[in-house]
Length: 241
Image (cartoon, rainbow, N blue to C red; front, side):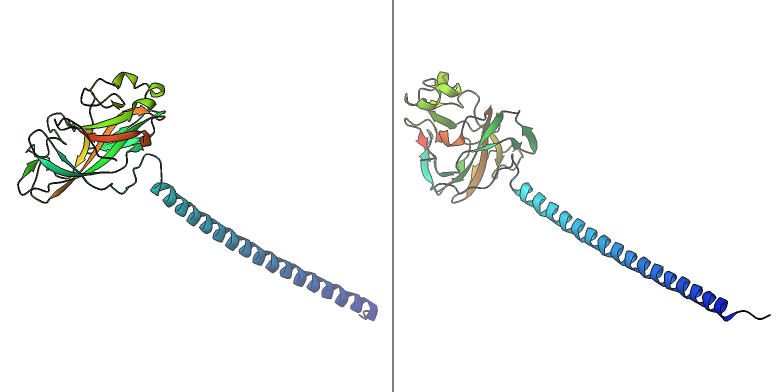
């Protein structure tokens, strides 16, 4: 059977176009797959970068999150004496505010609108004999009996502490002992071995004692508060001059 040349040519042309379309389709598919791979890689990189950013941000926030105390340099030591003639050199850190405190492994949180006032004392025994720390840490009550938070009378009226002015006869009229009655809680004492034995300091040794008071309203600025030592002497000593 004889097939006309024109028909053969049409068949060849048709097959050639089919091959071209298949080639184009394969090329388009390959380009699509490459674009998807690039997009996925970009997404993965962005996700990884985002994750790293979140970790970095989390670390930054953790180191400065509210409620966690930051260390602060203590002021120069002040020599104090109590009624029993014991002598100490005491350095007080600036008073700070904290929404959370740790009292001998027990965590306490303040309510919204309230905070705790916290201070750390570095107490050194400069004498040649063993000295007891009962002025700074009473094991029976868990308080620092001879350490007081004091505020100037000019700041007390708006903060609700006017009634504390003059209540403690050891302090003259301009000074108000705002912690009188409640006392300062000993949160931690490096010299306390938790065995109920008297807390003492050997000659030349030092203890760090963290104290807290409150909760108080957040409008009580720590900068308004000073730390005094009143060990039974005629004039209490300001530890934060």
